[in-house]
Length: 350
Image 1: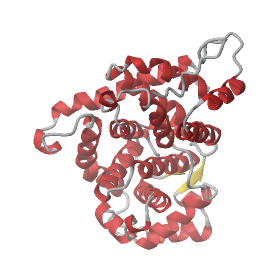
Image 2: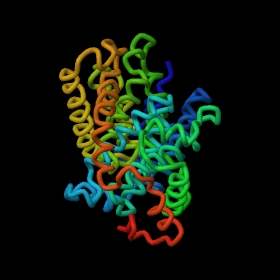
Image 3: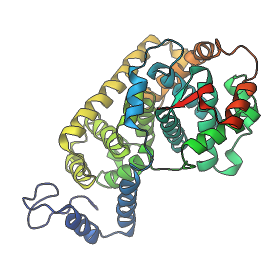
């Protein structure tokens, strides 16, 4: 069986050489692979690692959101997390992919970390970010009408509002929508790792379960501070421990070294991921079986709980955001916002 990350030169295993040269080691690893698929995955991984930091949320902006007081005037981590859970609910309803959801969260966090967004505009911003992600990743036949997206979300703004908001978001992000996300890296890592498992053991390490765990992490603002490779590898390592797949330890270490991630950083983020997933798992006991359809496939506990959380919080979150806007359309404010570019009306630069 092919073990693409177990290359052992004369000096020792990956990450254990006294004269470790990352560039030379990477090239040797690629040269020793015996399948074109494994080589393609490693070249793809190289490309993703090179690009991952180019379009990530500003750390200083995320910290400002985390420390903001919940006074109804400033964006907070609680409001952001509620919005992301709503986007998850819409993702499930329309059958969008995890890639779409991950990109939507990336776009939203980049915008929130760059601009001071008043809470009353968050629904329009979030739905616009989701729609941008949908149009970037989904097949054309799966892209819903903006009117349907607004109707299902139960917001009161119009398609014209979304169009204007889309222009604002694109301009502030430099028209850069598609980028490397944790989901991209999770897919590549999983494909490289799973080759080291038997057919039976592969069932314990499903991509569906990893995606469910990624969704859970996306619903916490703190994980947006981790670079995509760090978050993806942390989720992978936690799953390996939970499923007791100890034969993958060396492979995970190889990926860690290959991705230039320190052991200390990985340990810290693994702890945070494990805590996040444990909280979602424990809160499942508070829900009735009917609310989560009684039986979920193996490995979907986190996603099942997330879906229930996003559904139950949907109306309360809308009420929280709309209490300052009334039932009228947001068009007048947004028209002024788009035409005059007076971001003080609803947005300010950090």
